[in-house]
Amino acid sequence: MKRTALGLSLLVALCSEPAFAQQSKGDREIGLGGQFFYTHNATAGSLAIEASFGYFLTARDYIGVEVEPNLVFTKLNGVRSTQGEIFVKGSYRPLFGDRKGRVFPFVGGGAGVEELGTVIGFGGATAAGFATNALVFGEVG
Image (cartoon, rainbow, N blue to C red; front, side):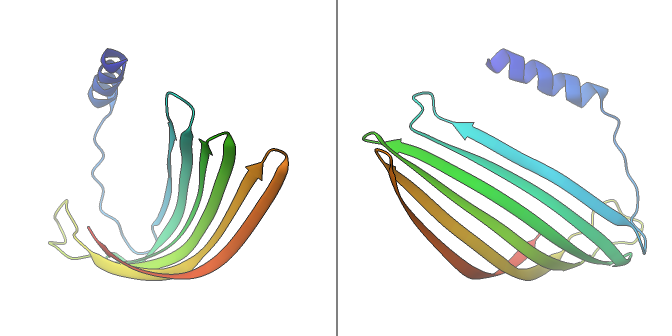
């Protein structure tokens, strides 16, 4: 398994062509990512996805929106539990650094909403709970 992962990583690294481009006013950025985790004994796992859309107001000012649904599932002593949450947030990032450089550090932040839900199964019966939380965050990159 480790050899396969290493081989695929080397293949991607060797076959990909680096792209260096400078952002400018009006450029758009679309992002999609995620991860899946499952234990070998099937007692816990998670699925997380992130989708984002951003827009450059100027070459140095970025605003964006992100949606992040997550699922966490567990099985403990025969009882299954599933917890789901979704984050919806907006952000702003002022970019710093040399205009002709390839690296643009930023310090930014934003706010959003988290909707959290839990469903626990007890041999056919279920108990559910839901909560909504406000979210404020800072970013450095």
